[in-house]
Image (tube, rainbow, N blue to C red; front, side, top):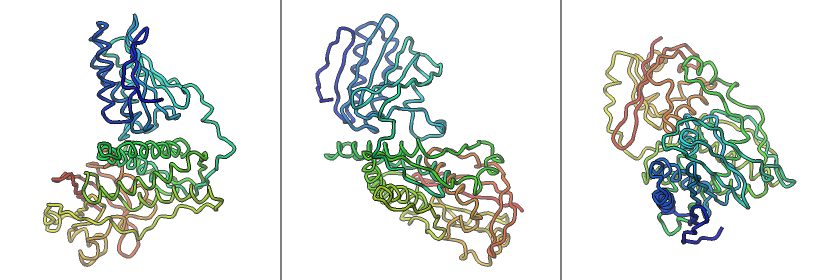
Length: 432
C-alpha cells in the first residue's frame, strides 16, 4: 500500500492511507470523528476513537507498514477497517488477563458488536462494527484461514530441548514491554521508520514463539501455584518451532533490538526494572538455536546458569536497611534486581549462616532450591512486566536452602515497597 495523505470519499464512507508514523494515530482518530459527526452519529465518537487508536497503534508496532483506514456509517452503525502489511492475524492470548500488551484486542472483545480479521493482499484487515457506544458484550474473533499459515518446504523445524516454559512466559511479557518502551523513545527520531520496522520484525518472531511453545497454566491461588511451579513440571523436554525462511531474519533483529533496549534501560534512559540474567540468556539461546539449526547445526538444550550475577546497580535505592538488620524477626530484604541487600540475625541463624556478608550482595536464588528457581525468576519478572503478584502479602509454605545445602520448610510472607524513581524493595518474613 502506497502512502496517500488525501482522504478518499467513497460512495459510502471515507478512506485514508497513512504512513508508519506515530502521528497516524491522531489522523485516524480525526478521520473517524469527522465521519461520525458528519453523519449525525456523535453518540459513537468516544468509543470509536478509542478503538481505532488501539488498532492503528497495533498496526504501527506490529507491522511497521503503511496503514489503510476505512470508516463507513450505515443504517445500523459504524464499520471501521484497519489494514496493514503484516500477514499475521491477531488472536486472543491464553494469558491476556495478565498481559502487559494486547489491550486493543481486549477492548474489541469488550466494546464492539462484532469484529474480525482476514487476509488481504500481502497483509490483513482488522475490522469492527459499532451499533451503540456502550457495548460491553464479549465477542469471539472470527478469522479466515490463510495460506501463509501453512508450513512451506523451506521451513526449518527448530528443535528446542529442555524448554523452561515459565521462563519463556515471563520473557515473552518482559520482551514485549521492553520493545514497546524502546519504540516509544525511538519513533520520533530520524530513524523512526527503521525502529518501527525492527519492532514489527521482533514482534513477528515473538508471535511465532507464542504460537508454537506450550503455555503453562498459572493459578491465582497461592497454594495451587506453588504445587504446580516446580521442576520438572514447568519445563518441556522438547518443543518444535517451525521457522519459515522469511522469519529467520526476524530472530536476528529481535536479538539486536532487545540488546539495544536492555542497554538503554540499564543506563536509565527509560524506567524499567533490572533484567534478570536468565531472561537475557533465554533470548540469546532461542535466537541462537534458530540461527544454528537453520544452518544445519544440532540442537543445544537449555541450561540455567546458576552462577549468573545480578545486573549491576548504578543508582542509590534510598532505602534504610536498618529496618531489617535490627529486627528481632527473621527478615530478608531484596532489591528489584533480586539481590539480597539486608538480613536480620534471626534469618541468618535460620539459614545457617554466621555473618550477613555471606549473603548480602548475593541473589535470592542462593536460598531457593534449584527445582523452584524457574518459578522464582518467572514470578519476579512477571511482577514488573504485568503487575501479576499472586504471592505478595500471602503466607505460603516453601522449602528454603540452608548454607550446608539442606532444605527446610518455611512460611514466607513477602511485601513490596515502592521507592522514588520507580524502584522497588521486597521484604520477606520467615517463620519456621
